[in-house]
Length: 56
Image (cartoon, rainbow, N blue to C red; front, side, top):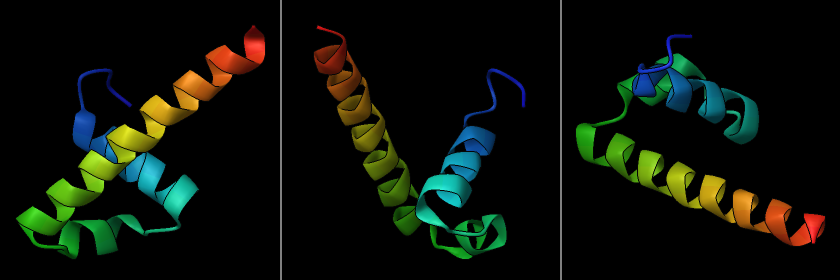
């Protein structure tokens, strides 16, 4: 994956964490896909915060 290819990173996360196949993700409307991406961002941030808490 290219570092700057956000769409690929979202598809990877959706597949492995949310069990959404890439073709299913791409078939969603723009607004639905944008909502999924926003939810992924929130989850990633929460996981980062939880990891920091565990390390303390």
